Amino acid sequence: MTDEGINNILHLYLVVKVDVETLVDRMPNEIRVALATLGCKLNQAETELLAGQFTRAGLRLVSPDSAADIYILNTCSVTHIADRKSRHLLRLAHRLNPEALVVATGCYAQRAPKELAHIDGVSLVIGGDEKPRLPQVLEEKGHLHRMPATRQRLFARNGFKTRALIKVQDGCSNFCSYCIVPLVRGREKSLPADEIIAHIRTKIEAGYKEVVITGVKVGSYKHDGIDLKGLLERILAETDIKRLRLSSLQPQEIHPGLLKLWRDSRLCPHFHLSLQSGSDRVLKLMNRRYRAGEYQQVVALIRNMVPDVAITTDIIVGFPGESEAEFLESYELSQQMGFARIHVFPYSPRDGTEAAQFPDTLSPQIKRERTKRMLSLACQSTRNFNQKFSGKIMPVLWEKRSPSGVWSGLTPNYIKVYTESNKDLTNKLLPLKLVEIRDDGVWGEIPSSSGFCIHTGP
Ligand code: SF4
Image (cartoon, rainbow, N blue to C red; front, top):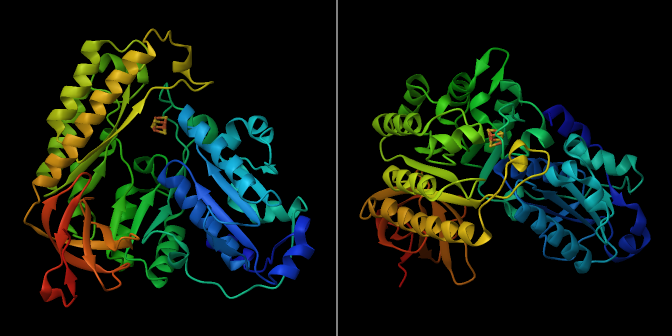
């Protein structure tokens, strides 16, 4: 969606046609739209764009678990679990308000629209191609008509995170054998750098301090001769964003020239590099474009050039034909890499992908047992990484306060941190002394020199 596209939508004033009289009687000028997202950061970035369109068009954003007049679910279809969650949330939306318009969009909607259309209560299924202009599509299909706009609030006050997700690219031409994404999102296409920079500036004006560069395959960014390195250079030179984070890269996309940019401390020392498997045979079957040794070399290069870096990863467990020895290669390599986080995905076949044709001889019990072992390593790995920073003072962007009064936020290198304070820390960048390792993060204290009243936790 271009800025021009967003501006056009400023002139659209929408209301749910199916329920217009009731709504106007009950809550004039205030149509409640609930947006929910499953899946990757790109999906989240696209939901934020939709939220902007609806907000500017005069609708009120409400939480997805509250009563709304329109529910929109941006689905994911990367695993069968994501499919199941998508169906569950659509049914839940219908139960929350049986009169509401329930709209399914996103990757599942693109992959299997009929499957979703048959779910009780689903009013509309909008494929990925039409997702960026969803409000207009609803209007064109006769489900909405114009009404006066109401005064609106910033996204951050409507439950959105303090990090703005900026879409720079879509699609993938890699065709990993297990992955449905190229089939539902199509080939790689990048957005113009000028448009991305303008988008980041609007986020800075709205108060955001951190942006996350997001896409299916960010490392393949290419537009008008500008690659990812060129794009990052321009963002750093042409905006005063305080923190810039990349969502995900592949080992073959990383080179010393790119890493030199991390001399600018605004670039967060955090790389998400999907490993998927530590076995060269399995990596080949997966159609990944690197071998385990090359992955290790890239990690060594990053660690050498980017101090205090966090490297996070994804591992697929139980790929068809994965032997115990090959699983152990993944396990041992993950152990050696000292990952800050490991996302573990038990393999599930996706119709239409190459791997769905591979004979799958592994029993569910073996897959479950390997998943459990890898998850246990993931927990230990995060604790080990966090432990290295115990006692250090690090800048934290504070995100939210739990009902019990505990604030949470992130360090530049993606350590989840917690503290207690009676002040509003939302979206503030403040130092924290990391004190005590907890399950998934670190408890800390804001130094009194920061001027904040501190209450340290138990
Ligand atoms: S690189 Fe592979 S896993 Fe990632 S989106 Fe493309 S095909 Fe899927």
